[in-house]
Image 1: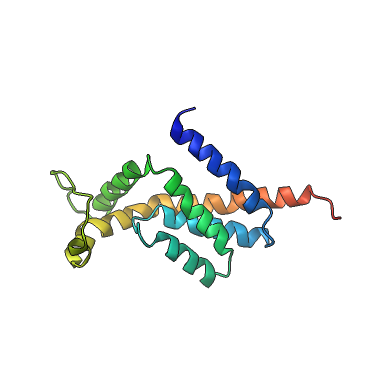
Image 2: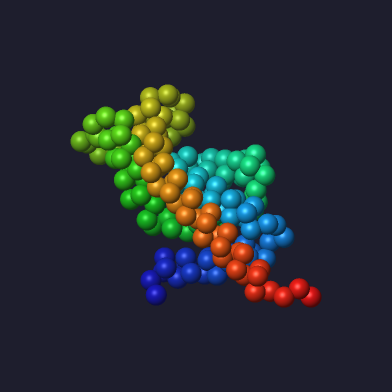
Length: 159
């Protein structure tokens, strides 16, 4: 098995039991997972884990499930640049902006983060474009996780 797929499989197996055996309701765990998946698709690289935990806290759902789900995107790091670029292109299209014909520099320094034009030029289109993956993925994740957790718990007999 190629290295990235082996890494993904180990990660999924390692966290599967954590999610299935949490002492929380299926709704809370599923909603926390959906929040994490949502923020994992956003281009808010250094803030996505903190934002997912904060939103999970506001929604009163499982914060650990949110942190685990947002981390899934870090395991898929080999595919995320292509996804972020596609989100950026979709955002440019939605905002009726021409995508730049020159190469985009994805290496940012502190100077770049302190200027509003970097956000408006790069992050905003990518954020808008990310919604087309983030929202459906979060909805699907919620229903799949809720079903899996409910089935796993229904199969367990009490003491």
